[in-house]
Length: 334
Image 1: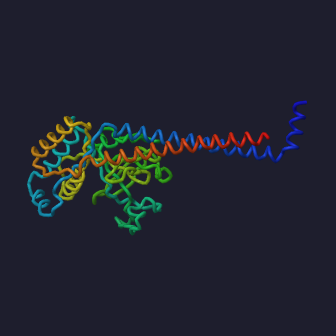
Image 2 (image 1 turned 60 degrees about the vertical axis):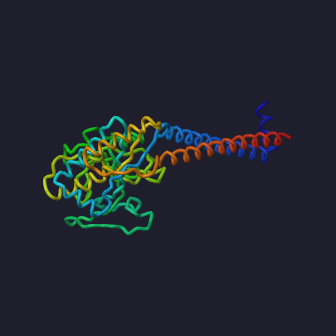
Image 3 (image 1 turned 120 degrees about the horizontal axis):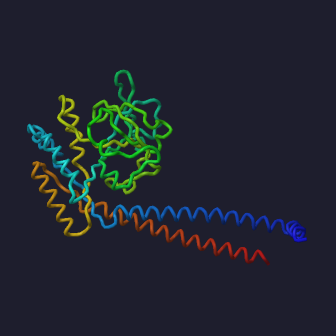
């Protein structure tokens, strides 16, 4: 009986029922979209808070950008020892965290690489290629970092493993690298590939793929995504075996001593950090400087404010949609 009445109702008001079904479907789609978006905003704000809340971040540079000062320093017989000790003491200090990061490109054996991996592609730069022993290599995006940087930004893999301590030493000839998520269809876990890193041919092994949309704060970019990058560990090296090896280590260590200092955002800890860095620099006769005052903290606050504002806007729009749907349902009954 009830079923027959329902059929008669559908025949009589089939257009109205169709409109109601469409409305409910659209509402459910919007509801799912809003919930997913709010969850993403919550995740982003929590992630930022975990990384930067209560922290102060300063950029540390060497002062050898002047050609004459650079040559004078490198002419010292023990310059490489000073660089190594300086980096090691920064990297192992318990008074602050030292994040060594840089985005220098590498040359990668080209077997038909998509253009999005090419260095400078987005800005319209020309594709740089070199022929090495008859094989074509292309300049691709690469990001170098120490373990503390990977840990600080909570980087993790969707496949494979992150670096261990041994991956930052020069104990093996093959370097362990991580690949951005966009490389998953090109290379396999455990695969070895050939690169040229700071003019040195190098075999590297893929140990993991970063999670999609993995990102960090780098220089003036609050959301520096690593999906299209090859991520290389900053390894520490022993005595150079040749002039070419010495030049490689020189370039590598000069990149490694330019990074970011993270400390607790209070006067006592900040002063302690400044004093410790000054002592490390003087001990190794390194000329250094800081750029700006806590430059990333302002970026973090601005981005967090934007996320919270977007969350409030989405919530308001969501509740307005619920009210509108209920209103339409109400008038549809008459």
